[in-house]
Image (cartoon, rainbow, N blue to C red; front, side, top):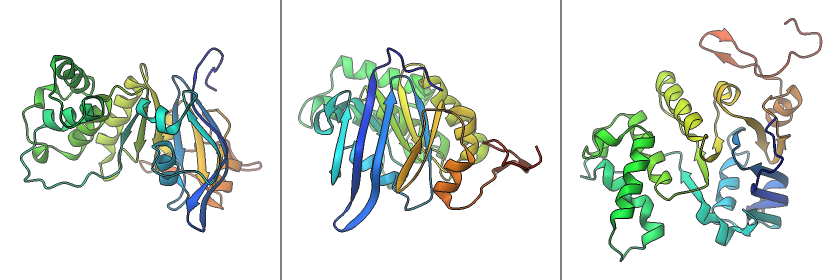
Length: 260
């Protein structure tokens, strides 16, 4: 379990409900993420993972309860968040370079009508260096591999100088070997930044994150690293074992009476 003594609460959600018009999606969510945590949240499609992100980014207001970021309302505190969306659609033929994509992360600091200055350039360079993509800064983004593009999008989020990095399915449609390199990168970034990652990859949750939770309308989160049978079954409504690389890989203790 992540040691929380003297750690600042970065995200604090209390008794929150959220949804769309008359359709509730999240109910009675209580959650705290502390400085330095790397939390992995798993859950089925339609379980509310994207809705939670929208609430944190200020794109959707809760229907009940409170959400604060570093003790501030979302409208103010969201400036401390960096977001990497699940899918980034763009014309592969559009001539935009790696550098220009990452530089877009500075718009929130500079505004549309302000020129980039030397400080912006240094931050963009640092962000690219942190994701090991600086050597590709002149390359068109459309010429990159899927894993390389994902690193660029992470760098774009880092260029906004966030204190919490939120990623929605960062390795979707990327092969396992490249996925492992992305998770290793996030693990390294976590030395300096708090991370919340939405993912379907249970092996990644088990191997790379510090704490884990399951979300499906309700959030099952206890501030620990282990996925328990109760958390999994409450989320997916059935027993789940993880099979990875052709071998059984259990991310929670055996059920009572199940052979080890």
